[in-house]
Image 1: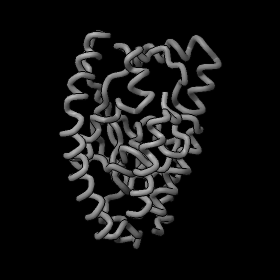
Image 2: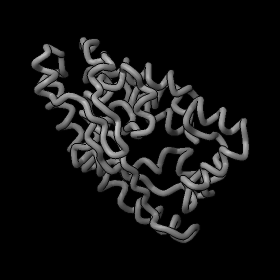
Image 3: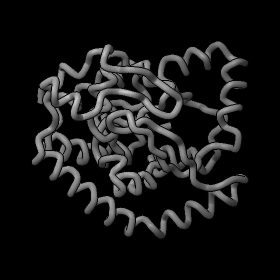
Length: 241
């Protein structure tokens, strides 16, 4: 799927805390840019609805138990809601099981200010392998990516897809450079090429390259392959921390 024309940095009007402003779909089509076929979009969305609904029904008992354990271990609401940048730059609230202590963002600033090594690690991958903010329960949930399960709700509501580029934080959007419009041309995914290719073990620039590659080569066969690769990757905890 040829989407190279979407990679021009001039197509990004501005980046704000709550929304990334880029041209509308009408603008893109008017300039002759290629988008995923109607058939592919219809099949993907149909699979998203069916599989996310079935998945939510199956995991309800686990979710109830996880919410209880999280609430017992540390104070605060057991779900974590974070604003992310969705398709075409529209903001949405991503839902996760809370895996960190309260005031995590403030503690991150303190943590990075106290250690040059941690700051270097954060600059490279935007994550810390031994993040002191993560709770004991949270570390277990992250190891098996169980904290991501509530995002099935985002998939069901059409804010995300089962497979796609991982949702972008607004302050990380500039790191995508000219690939940003390309990556934001599809729904972000619960899993994706980056997620099964090393995940947090990769640098952020490697992530950008993989996310862009996924969009350029997007296909139903590719999505099914990524879903199949996700299961063993999650079970071994690859790149998850």
